[in-house]
Image (cartoon, rainbow, N blue to C red; front, side, top):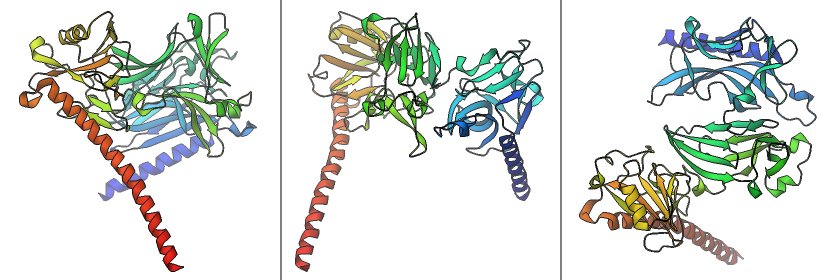
Length: 484
């Protein structure tokens, strides 16, 4: 135990030395032949982050006192999908304390012992582990690359002797779009929620719209979109001083997404009141425009695509309902779970499962398989006969087909099997999972009771709290009168 503590102390001092050394030596560029190595702990240290800052923009030169960009080589502890632990090595860009780009965003490079970053003499930027194993590279060898730079826009670039860009991080977006960055049609931002290992979010630019999607394997469902008027086509989008701007083929602005009016009144050419970045939240899947607030010295969102909790696709776990009280209630008798797709047992024939109507709910996810001009019973039978379907939403003759049960929220009204607006939501369950022989009506009553109980308890607490407050205030008033 004593030797282990000594080893940990030595390692901590090594890491402290490395981080401080390279932070002091940081500049706006590094040249061919540059190498830096970070040591990786021999034992797992939960939450460990080792970071060497290599370059930075000079924020002190900005008259607006905005945070600058920094480039870092990082070693981080993380949990794999199977629950085991590992260390990853990546090159990262930070705006202040916010990570805005990561070479390991899509695929982590796992390392042991050491993590090495090198700009080779041939001009290739590489991350390597023990035994010269290459885990990430720019692929720019032989293109005349001379140095790595971080521009004032936050774009990490490799340039030749004439300052021509041979590689840039702006061409490989992650979950953040920076001020001044452009994304063309077919480009996307992606984000990966840790709680749902099989899911990820994406913000995508298409010719007719920009949209947010929930992805699960080959399944893809939208939950927010924005379309230019008059059916105008999009060629690219850019984050500018007034928000996210959409342009056509001729470079003309055709639409814009701006923050709320209170922020919009002060927006101009002053970068201190311009959006610094747009981010796709890796927990909720919400899209936000972030501004730097000097008063609190942090970035704050002054625009969000979705402002209500229950409009988010993963507000609840799979097989959960987001209620009026922004709480979650399960719609299966064995409780909600983390598995987004639960089609096991549904491919043994139609008799293996049954469709159950859930009253007073709808789904926020759209754009799955769809059929028009169906009756409610035909919609239900379509899902019943498809083993890949686990839920369906019927809305005025339109039948939406789902391979996941997510994004379900409570809505007002009820027409017996719908939400009072001509819609009905059905969930497929294995036969025999509904106890007592009551079948569909039993599950409907059970789901509604849970929703009602949760909302009722919350309302009871709120009303009780208000009543207690006034009684307590009145008692203080009486005590004050007696003293007088």
